[in-house]
Length: 437
Image 1 (cartoon, helix red, strand yellow):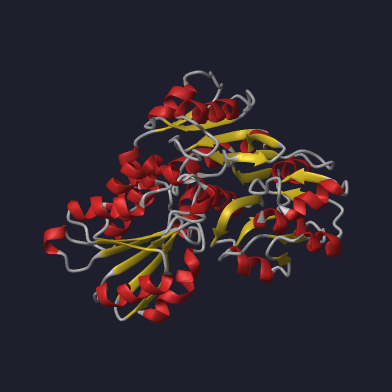
Image 2 (cartoon, helix red, strand yellow; image 1 turned 90 degrees about the horizontal axis):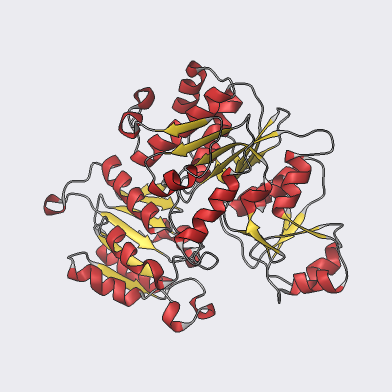
């Protein structure tokens, strides 16, 4: 929603918004854009602002005081996906060609990378990303070129439209990074989840392009049901790790291969792709180094799915040259908040235990808004801690940030690498941690 607000502001609209609470880095981005954000939700905001159109995010449901005011007073409301389509993909002045990046993991980074390659090629794309692309300094860009590069989310659209958001984006080029069950609050099983991607692929026109990861079993099964005229299968994953002479983790190598396939299809030279990849700075909150104090490195990361957690931990161990556990000279210290609809549920508990084993020390925080779930649905933090301890991993659980920081001061060692993983605010841990070390 913050990215859409920025695009609309650049297009000349007067924009304001509201949320229950604001998180970085979007909070600072919106402040810089001078877009007013009201918190928490209140019908007073609608009475005061009196907007012509209300864009309703998918997190907003019946009972929200602002939504109830909109419905009761007959205000015009639309979904984020509808506004993106009407204003930026298919505006009255003439349609553009959309490049939509999808998948359970890697969407944001791949979207930012493709956008940067097209920007370096002088194609001036419009960009819509789910995180702040460091090269652009924001999560959006209003361009004059014919391409719109969008992060395609499989989550539902709005309270009045339960279809996936990416069904609305009319993909000319579609990228499917990977498919692994997520968003279990709306997808009951992997087959329902795969169906969302099947429908997405079916929207790509004959003269378009599908870029698919052939090493992902679920992606392969979905693609087999269709016969797109142009299919770029991402292969040679190991070779991709040395692509352009750069060293990357396995996931990033696949992201680069996908971006290269898209870029070459739209006419970008190999040399331009090479230079763009070399100058790509990534996305904020994706293994972003927050600071170093007393030899202790603090990293912020958005990972919340167990696969993403495991892959990120492995990449960090490789990056910081950590030795096997029996010879530890520096440790990977994980602080994890179960914040997403999936991570705060028990369904992936076993997978999280396996993922957390890739850290050397684990702090688990209370699940975000767990009271909204049935008790037997909630991620059992103490059970996970017990399982980790049995496997030799020092692990603790906390329901209070002050307690967490108190224990951290006694447990950290010089040269440790602390990684904070959360898609929420972690009760302000990011803002306080460097001052507490």
